Length: 341
Image (cartoon, rainbow, N blue to C red; front, side, top):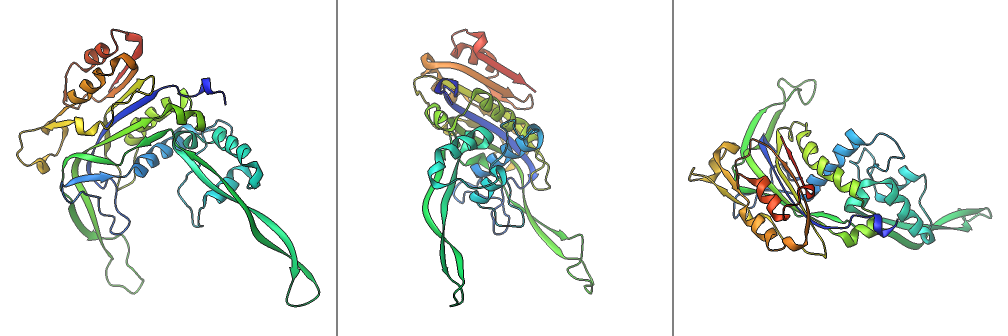
């Protein structure tokens, strides 16, 4: 892929969404929401956010085997799903160790999540030798592991683990299951689950234009990323993930490798509830992103484009966000995209 056709900007993303009476990201032991023990804030892994993006693309956008929107990292089925097996599912067979560069190009061309997030595919070339079977004279073919290689691509798009912008409660709910544990049982099974009454979750992301050259990340892929962040979050529909609502999505595109750094410590929540664990809806607080805009302002000479998605239910400071974003761009209206919902 020509370098000129890959994504050319160093971009920073701020994404805020809220969750209502659900489990935003359970741990693998009790399926309990992850929580910072010091601050009481709810944690959400970047893996969970990438899963949202991948699922949206796979379910709503991937229509043709040759559309370049295949998803390499899928949820495992009943068999152990390795990266090598997944590669074989897509391309029929593993490449030989000497064909890694060709295999890398195929993977980039076919799979959008590889272009976004990178991939690691170990490749071990099998060598077949003749040996003795059972001590007899008949020879048998024996496969041995030989020369090893692999595909290693660092993703141009990276997100930090997300966190709620306030302390939140975790509530335990007990109840009965739909079925008994066995036919002779006299009652149904009991179930135990944990939910968060409400939390506003924040993620910070970066797109690296230099790594975009290595993974083949294109402008169209970044446009799809933004779409998947917003609509994929809204489309979450499992029992534990339903009722997620996107509230604010901002992307700032810079030239010359300019970068502001972590956005979330520049976002403030203003409320008058006393204990922030009492927050239950966007009506209970105001989100102040003035610190983010001030940081971008100091680098505005290198700012070339801004994209904003905003939900009307979010109380936000500054209220005149569109005007503030336009001012950052020096009055270039064509460089600003705002979608209001």
